Length: 381
Image (cartoon, rainbow, N blue to C red):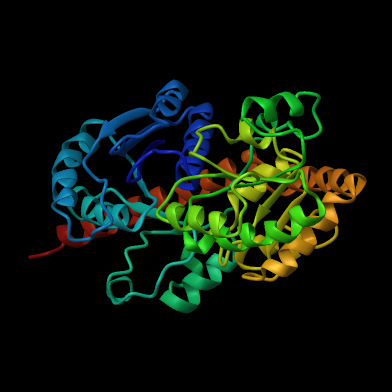
């Protein structure tokens, strides 16, 4: 198959990780993979894997941006030249671009819904999901069906797969050295890897650190990510007097390196489509704490492979963190069970296999539709 991925950029983040995992798996199966985007920090990882990059000026969130028209006219001859069979969109803007490409090139497209969308009028009037839409978790599937009336038969639930061979960092002898390399102290490190957005709940994690360090003075919080909330979160850290134990670190392209320095991973999201950060931490063997929202509930079985807390509850979050900080053997047990859970239920191989089935279905149905249309036109007077 010849597949074209559309995404605004390939900077470090959940969507980039998803597309890279898919692209690498498809290439290993012998498919040809093309990436059209504005580029980004992780571009070399795509090209090193064998994907072909085509630059388009699509770094925009506006559905009315002229960049969409420019990208359309750049891609139309490219699609024909490379015999693209299917287009896979991953953001709202690229869904619109894919719909236009389908209109003018005849190539079918599908999209992946990576989380929860606001029910804006434009999404209701112009859904643009494509021939099929991949939901990354059952809650996302329910969101699509309930809030956007997407026909259930068009939705396929395919969670993000994790390559567990990349994550084997918890409990290793190199953890003290990794902490030192990142400028952290030898004490226990609580960590989060996520963009600095209000929906990720960082403020509650910072607030929870106040009672935590009162009981465990050498505890540290490592916040990995970038975003518009950074000034506000830094100010909160200052007001609480936590400058010495809360550290911010820019986004990294390889999360395994920073996870290797952590003792506990926390994701206090207010909503979450699935929770790639949690999945990678679990694959790494770290004990995890997450909010009981969205797809996180399909990852963490409370008390078995992690702990769940109510969202926006700093007091309960602090209690869960202290519970694990004071019980290292339990941390180890939860981490081991989490790693096994990811290996059994979220394998990369299963993700690739199920996605290729959806691709084949879209291409086959498009071929049938094209044949029917050609037959109808042949019988016109």
